[in-house]
Image (cartoon, rainbow, N blue to C red; front, side, top):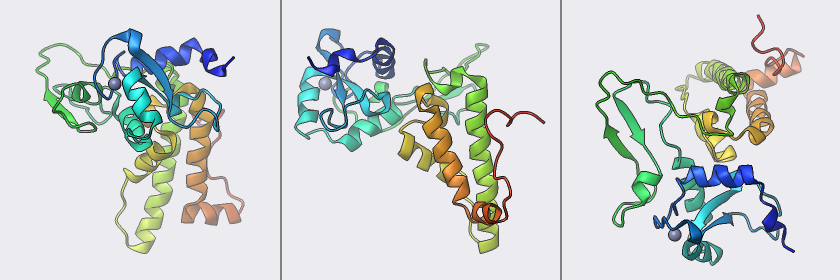
Length: 227
Ligand SMILES: [Zn+2]
């Protein structure tokens, strides 16, 4: 029997939540047609990793298998399938991404829809994706600590080279590598995320200098929040 049958229920649930239980490509809402697609060919990459899996209807699944829907598009959909942008600090404005704008026939997949919501006295909190690092205060704290650390190192490098510091670049690289925004990273990718950020810190100019001098580049997870 195929190992495909053994997709853990937790991952299945996460993937359905990610797309709001509808096909993120064509908008099909009949759940009986919804299937889980391995973006990386399962035969050559036999693992159930939510970052490389997506819910699609049977039609779109077949198209994806034939390469008519590209991997890049599927990863892009996954990236945008999260509901509120981390940058929306004002309560009156939220960015609705992903699912909302891929359902309609004429709406461009991958585009952003910006909606102003008059919230009155209601509080809007950022939704936490179940199973993501945001459920664990210390884990999301450590990832944000490493991002900050990287930017401190990079800023030093940019200043010494007279270049403009671009704070968003590390997050863009992170999303390219992990396929998730920092806050939405699945808990099972935490170690990968830590390794990625630590590697990036070590690869900065300051990181290499400090390494050579035997200096520590960052606190480890156990100690980062201890003063
Ligand atoms: Zn579909």
